[in-house]
Length: 399
Image (cartoon, rainbow, N blue to C red; front, side, top):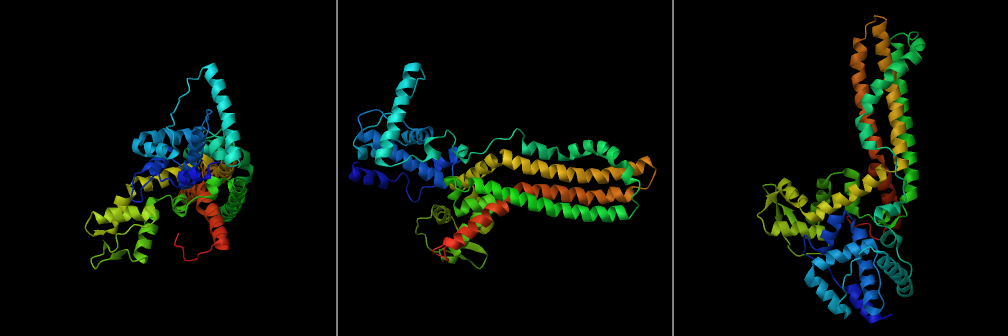
């Protein structure tokens, strides 16, 4: 291995510190990659190009590495500089997908794996073995769409109320008021506690299954904030707050924010805020927040976090928890609907039941939504906090 060349290749920078839409940001934004995975893919691209430059035989990239390569070709100056550093112009040869080409590229892929092992060790699976890096989570896709099921939750509950009413009719006519409503309220509260415990335990088991995956394991603090809050403003709060605490930004007497120190650091998100403030007069926080949110570097956080959510929510394990919760809540709503149907059938007053069902419906929807987000708002953040507190070398690190 040419260690001197590799050290130069490893130090090669694709971005400038002040870039708001540089190579890595564009790569991450267009492919909805996390910050870690973007840097991982860039490193593997460097390794592949090093192998291509130092071997006379053909080597073949993974689909992920090929995405990086295609993107780099667009940045012509950077690509030329990189090839100059490598000492060889690496030409991109697209496959024509005919039979002879297939055998040639298959052999090249096997050769690449052997050369990689000799020079760098084992190829990271999430970059080299998958077309879609999210498949490395190894979650089985569900047959059901949780989002559509939730939208139709009330319809399904109403349709099920008639058969439920027929089934429990003999029991309903025996229970007098107000005992029915008191018992129902207590039972409903108990159901919510049981569902919360069930969901938390089930999602903890799901997280244990995926937590060792490098993409999940290396979520950045800001990606975790968005994963938890589902709100980019909360991410901006953290970045701007630290600029204030580090005295780079100060709050003026008219509640506008003014830039005190315009020097850049190695934090790209802080640099983005500084860049905006350098070109503007002091502005209210809401205006600054809006301007920051529009920047691609922050949009990438949102897209990558949502991609992780979508992958997990489409899994069989996640869907089972949501469907089970929907069935339990739906059946409980059917009980009070059955009481109304029974009352109407027997010509009893049911006006108070119509009023009472509204808070139960709202509570059911709220808890279903809460359970749907529990993995992202509680289970994953809590695990990260515990792990960081246990291993942190710097307790003053604001992130």
